[in-house]
Image (cartoon, rainbow, N blue to C red; front, side):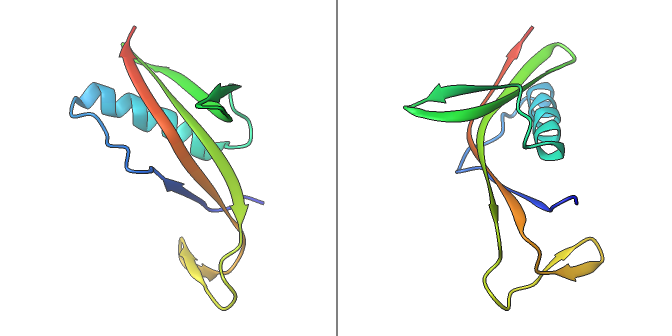
Length: 102
């Protein structure tokens, strides 16, 4: 079953450069499509985080994240596509995003 994925950016802003932003969007899309299979696990600020990375054009981008499968509060429904649901969803909590030139 494919679960809906919600992303919490924790106040992290995207860069102003279009190529940098495109690389971060690409790695976020890769993460959203398969949050349970990261490229590797690495400690960051004393906690293990999942890391996903990608090469996009002349940029390399990565995100460090954690995920949790949550259920909405009882009686709460939300929209996925054209249907209402109360199924559990995946919450991605982005801890760090980085992008650089290759």
